[in-house]
Structures are given as structure tokens and as C-alpha cells.
Image 1 (cartoon, helix red, strand yellow):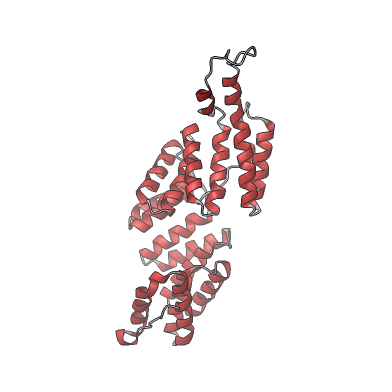
Image 2 (cartoon, rainbow, N blue to C red):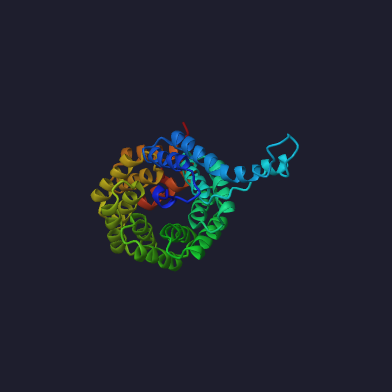
Length: 314
């Protein structure tokens, strides 16, 4: 959903080489999972690339005498960064904060990036992701709309907006965005994955599985896509392949509650109630709000509310 821009495309003629070096090192650390190290390097890049503005303002000062300058201390402390590179460094640091689930600092960085460069479409995409994670769906949609207005070929904006349309029940709009993302970037796994869920809502499970297959072919490390294909296979009563997909989803992401939920339902249909209860317990441990859903699933599988599973809190 969110991505780092390649460092090589971001250099500005006035950007100090040391800032670019820190930025490159930050990207490498980010890609290797060293988020604290990445944040430290991005911070250095931000501070260094901000200095041209400070230097220009301080050049107003006369070298003779402490009081013979035209720029006030208040002016110096309220510098507006002029190097556009700084906006990219802020966006990259924001992405590292997102990975740490530090949404407050991420949001602040994306805001600053937009303030420096209001035409940086990627910053709107990333800020929209933070807003969506914090439950501000309307704000997220507004940011993704703005990103597309700035850059109509920005694939991430179409994918994010399409996924949000699925959650909103606007399936036609979701298909439009996800089809556009695939047209722009045919090798984007997440676009196929989200479109697979849109086909699930349409109950076209064959097309859903076809999209999940393509997504897995492009990126076999996305747990939620294996979970989606497992759910589609369950809908076609292919229980063993479904369980295999759900097993793999949980290997990739042991915290994926919906995978435990669906695998538990598959076990129920197979008559393996002890395995089902075990999975339901895991699902509820991860997400305590699932109790009512667990009862509905058991009732759907057995047709009797009197036999519904009840999971007691630990």
C-alpha cells in the first residue's frame, strides 16, 4: 500500500551530497527491517537538506557586530524549507513510522512533506493510508482523490481507493479503480488481490480464485491473499485446498484472526469440532470482538443456535 521512492530519482541540484547519502542509507536500512536506523538516517537527511534555507536567511546577517543583521531570531526559528528533496525524505521517514505503527509521527511527516511540496502525490497516498488506519475513511478517500488529481498514473492511489470502495460496498467503483491499477501496472499483486475480494462479494468465486492465483504468482508473501483464496475455495466446498491456503496464510502471519476464523469454520464443516474450537479460541485471543461472529458461523454450519460454540475469556 505504501512504498519508498527510489533514492536515485529524488536528487535535486541544490541538495547536499551528504543528505543524499543519508537518504540512501536510510532506504537500505528500511528495506532490511532496521526501522530505527532508517529513521535516524532519514532525520539526518532532513536536517542537512533543510540547511540551505537557514544559510540563505543567515546570509542577511552582517559579519560586523552582533546586532548588525536584518533577519530576526524569530525568522531564523521559523524557517520554511526550500529544498524539495526534504519532502521526499520526510515521506520516507513517515513510512518507517508507519511500519512501527507510530501513526502520530507518520502523519506529522506526511503533513510536513505536503506543506513543502503540495504537488507530491505520493505523500497524499501515504497520508491517506494513515488516515484509513486510524478510522478516518473520508479523510483517506479525500487524500487518494487528490493524489490521482495530481498524478493520474499513480497505481498505489487507485489500489488504496479501490480497496476502500470494497469496504464501503461500492463494488462498481472498486472494480473501476482496481482495473485501472492493473492496466497501469500489470504486475501489481495487491491490485489482483483486492479485486479477488471484489469478485468474492459478487459471488464469482472462479474469477476471485483466478485473481488470487495471479496475485500469489506475483508475490507469494502476502498472507491476506492466501486467506482470500482459502475463503473462495471454501465457498466452492473445496475444504482441503482451502485449509491448506489458510495454513499457509497463518504461517506468513500468525496474527491473522480471520484466517483462524475461516479455518475453524472449515473444520466445523468437516465435523472436527475440537480443531474448530481451538481455532476460534485463537481468533478471539487476537480479536476479542469476534464472539458474536463465531456464534453465527457455528449456527450457519449446524443450523442450530442451541449448539453454538461459546468461548470463555481467558
